[in-house]
Amino acid sequence: MTDPAPNPSLPIVRVPAHPGPPLRFQIRPVAPSLRSFLATEAGGAVLLLAATVVALLWANSMWSGAYDALWSSTAGWNVGPWSFEMDLHHWVNDAAMAIFFLVIGLEINREVTSGELRNRRTVAVPALGALGGLAVPALIYFAFNAGTPAQHGWGIVMSTDTAFLVGILALFGPRCPDQLRLFLLTLAVVDDIGAITVLAIFYTDTLWLPGLLVAAVLVAVILALRWLGVWRLAPYVLVGIALWGAVYASGVHATLAGVLVGLLLPSRSSRAVDVAVVPKYAKRLAQETTAEREHLTELAARAAVPTSERLQRVLHPWSAYVVVPVFGLANAGVRLDAESLSSAATSSVTIGVAVALVVGNAIGIFGASTLALRLGLGDLPGRVHYSHLLGGAILAGIGFTISLFIAELAFDDEVLIEQAKIGILAGSLVAAVLGSIALRFIGDRWPLCSPGAEGPPPSLPPLPWRPPTA
Image (cartoon, rainbow, N blue to C red; front, side, top):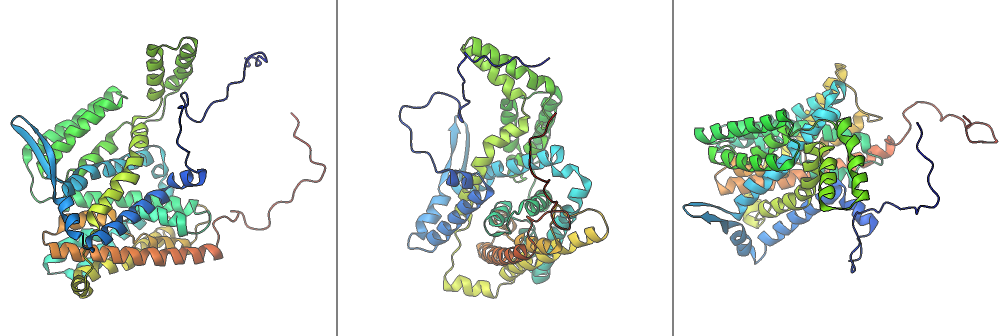
């Protein structure tokens, strides 16, 4: 059965880019080039870099006291006999960063369910590379600090900053970096899994058993909601907030609640029956535009999209453009006066962090990935060469967001925290510069845009060219 021919008497209605009637007064729209830039990972990386520069300038200016006073000021709530209060620094690190880790959990969930992590040969090389990027930097840092109070900070160097990594790749990497980007994103996802596991196991000081029991019950509730087929976001959000409170009270770092929620949310592919009913509700709405039919059409459209995907669409911009830059502003304010720089220049913590980030990731990721390729466990995607792999491994030495995060947990001594942060900033800067130069040089010699097949391109058919016939 074919669709009926269009009626020429009916007006042609073009689908607008955004639904709803336009406002009487509109702000001048953002330029398409700027809107396209902000929609990429490079936009989030630039905001994070800007926040870091502002934090460094602020903390080293005559207004440094205002910087410290801002993040030490408290905020909370008080209802009858119950109250909860934290300073702004902990609100950012413990609460806002839970959104960041929730987005990571959602990304891992999506990749495992319908993305690149489903294919064993595709994921084998970056996964083993990520394990090398976790182990070798930790060993290098430990070699610099073994037997000292700073040895507990080995987890600082075990994570790659995905936002900076992909952002710098987009800005300074080789032309057409899509295949290399795919490899590095898969590596970063496995790297995040390892860093989160280390964070949960080795950087939890004290545990409160009742809080853990409540958290376990709430996890079971999320699983029950998933088993029942609940697709609305509201129940998962409410249980997730309660889970954050239980994990915070248990002594485990509260951001891990975000990871758990992201991993457990339903991410199944849309069922054909759910998709098929959407046009029917939309047709009824077109016949009679009532609030009830509008509500039913909206619910039908939402039910056709996986729950995790809908939440990720809402939270990812907030995470990339608000949470992570604010985190950088709150944590990158390191004093860089002559005394602190002189102390850092001879500190085993600073040197260990910087060397582990730059050298450890380059050796660990490139070495483990090469081993996986030699053993035939997997393949590099597209036309990615060993040289691209080496440049990407150097660039993966940018350890910023989670590295700063773990530095706050690893040490109680403010001097050690400051030295670790200087090492993170120095190592990340060196890795970004060296990785960008290497990838640009390599990309010019072995472009990723070239055709996959060897030999000249196929010849065109003889003239005259005519449209194909049935």
